[in-house]
Image 1: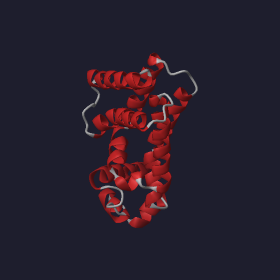
Image 2 (image 1 turned 120 degrees about the vertical axis):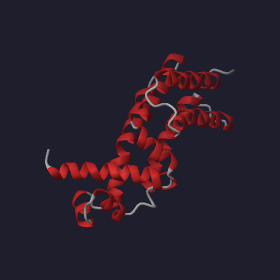
Image 3 (image 1 turned 180 degrees about the vertical axis):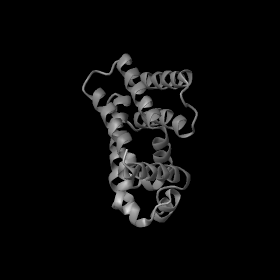
Image 4 (image 1 turned 90 degrees about the horizontal axis):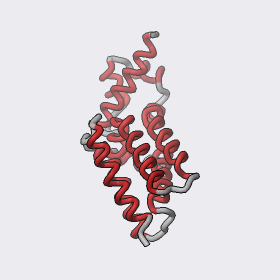
Length: 184
């Protein structure tokens, strides 16, 4: 593998680690260059800006979350399909655990024009699915709580690769979503 590819990967890893620890806004290009032993010029060789790095790190998680929601939006969401949505969504968060931890905790990402808007739209789509199209404030609040059941254990490092913990979270979220969607 060419050396410049390794340096690019080193920058990505150093950036993700720094963003988790200090946040995107509090991490400078100089910090990232120093953490990898590169100059600022070498950083710019790999990424034209810190924001380009931001998109490269956050993009795969957001792409995968959009794909999960898209797979479930077109069908009837009975209880089995609801469980599939929740399982897929949680698995995606776990597959991108460090990025999900960072994005969920970093206000500069949540408030970022493009990324924040994209994440908010994904959340709205999931809320609609979880709430079964119910527009009431109560239904939206409960759907938001269900989504939090999926993000918070990942953010707080409680799931890891433990299948029984994941199963417990899925079962709890499905139960809550089913009671919301199928309540008369």
